[in-house]
Length: 209
Ligand SMILES: [Zn+2]
Ligand SMILES: [Zn+2]
Image (cartoon, rainbow, N blue to C red; front, top):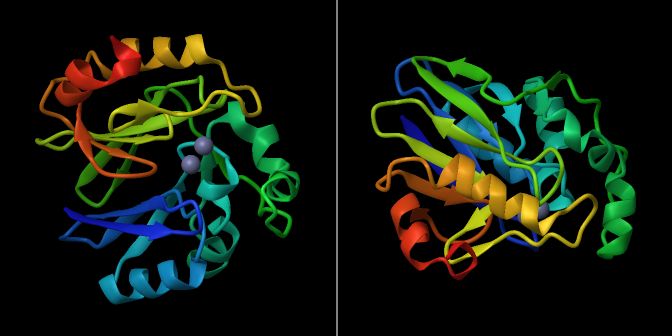
């Protein structure tokens, strides 16, 4: 497995490339900004992107999607619950003082527990609403499972719930029932900041006591 994280944009979104080391088929999670830099990295790694996956539709996670899509032609995948937030990309940008073009159409709606394959690997969708209605995490189903938690769960914190459709109680519920039930030693790769583990968050995250 090739796992390559690029920190992109002013909000420092973790954009993660996961690629099969045998077939070089890949998925790209949250191309939030700097599409040219991401495309250069895809070329350097020699991978073919099969899916453009998004943990949710906030601008810092989808801002580079259009540029990467135009180059890779990979389908844009998003949970249906975030469709309206995705379509209001330029309004999101205005609120944060940034300009965006109209987003490219969503190609594929992904749903809870759906499994997508790339090369010899598989990744599963876990719907974790609360930070946004269509927020999801992605769990790799390889021997050593890893979770990509978007802005649902951070190391020592959780995502904000004051943006469009956010709901604090729902987010806590999502994390407790969908993430903390996983094995303690599973590595967690949040949408911002450092990696952590399920066990570490269970023990130390002040929001989850
Ligand atoms: Zn977000
Ligand atoms: Zn974010």
